[in-house]
Image (cartoon, rainbow, N blue to C red; front, top):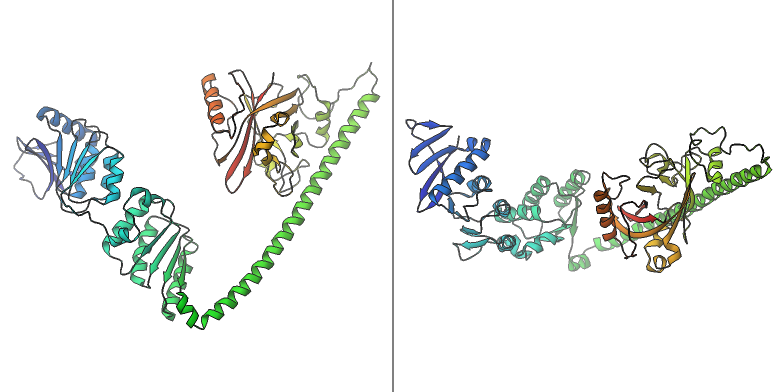
Length: 531
């Protein structure tokens, strides 16, 4: 068990490892008191009683008026920094070990709001930049900052360059310093796509792969620049491709120099292979285009058939109502399995569609788009992603309300309506992307969305249009209080592509349209009920 010696030297608190302890000294809470100016804690005790030790150290600093802490080893620094996190007395921190500062220590220092001065043996330039953001002044005892060949070769002296770097290279043989700095690079970087190895070296590849596997980095392309054509090298890379393609989606390739390709017979083979691949790709593209065209045509035709049936049902309902004897009117929703009798039914056209689907609740229309559909509602947000108005399996789905929304005459605070973005066929929300164009939303007539329900005819005025990566923060139907509602309004307004100058108060009700756009983004439109 490691023991940590705490002593007071020159008005500084000094932490170091102690190999053994005089057993004759008294024991207090797993702490051996060595002298008036020395204490010893076990490392386990500090980890298990961090708060107690932290308070004890702070009281000691207050009592002795101590503002500086010195640690003997890098590995001890992180533990001590944790117990100093709430110690406002300590502003200076020093590490005596003559080795390069680690990024883990840098991260821990950045979380301490009281330490403003660091003394260490050496520190990479990018860590200086990182600590400078937290107003921590660094003094290095070594005039030359230690930088590995990997950091120099990739010009990674600045923190920002490490964070945004998309491509790096290694020149074998890869050293331990290179690998340590590569580990730090992987902790910081978020955009790496390609690793170039200048020359084939299986040992270097294995070292790099260990770091990649440990950090679970995916979707990397590893390019080996080498003009040798040894079968064992190619076989080695084939095995790596097979092993890591599915696990981490890593790909390994050899890049030959132009001179090598010119003088090598394999150049023609590669060209012929590329031609064949090009032909295959062309056939695939033609096939995909044909499939998409046929699918879109069928989608449009299928939706057109449903819309035509809707028109027929509504027309038939209107004719039947005109033939009724005014002295003996029939209930237009008689024999329909839904409880609407206790509400004031306004739209008999919508009610007539119960004969097609009893989930019908309203009708949505967005000007200068193809959005002009009945709106359905069920007890989840999945069913109508894959079913049409007839409840048949259909990739187009249908336009539907959030299952949490009210279907009574009293609307929810925020009514949310979803639909697939069938961009190429234009059905469902396939033309809603027009709303993001300036020419569309600048027309005042386009800013009014018509949404009618069984119980009322309503117009909503657009106040926010935006695209955003997939999130659920705008998918709220009700709010706990007025402040929460107004905070929501301000949030979605701030995202808008245009300021529509629409005032909204706490008593208003909203309409939200949401559809997918791009790979994982959402197109969202918010509108407020016009009074």
